[in-house]
Image 1 (cartoon, one colour):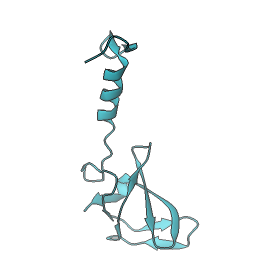
Image 2 (cartoon, rainbow, N blue to C red):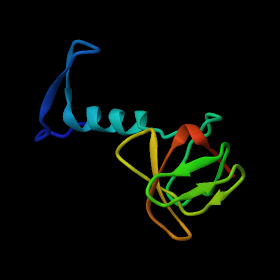
Image 3 (cartoon, helix red, strand yellow):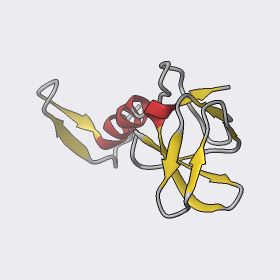
Length: 100
C-alpha cells in the first residue's frame, strides 16, 4: 500500500502513475540471479563449476566439478563474487556454475 507521502513515478510499461515503493519492489523481485541450469542463487550458496576455467592473472585453472562455497551476488545478474584458495577477487559468470 502506498502512503500519502510516497512519491509517484510514471510506469512506462503500464502507462500509469504508480507509487515509487511499488515500482522498487517490482524491480527487486525481477532481479533473480540464476545459474546455468536456471536455479535461483542467493548469497552464501555453494556452486560447482560446469567447465574448466582459466583464471586470468593467477596462472591457475579451476577444473570442472570444483566446489566454490559462500558466493556473494553482485549488481550484475550474470556475475557472482567468490573466494577460492590462493585467488583474491574471483568473479565467476553464472553461465559456468551450477547450484549444489
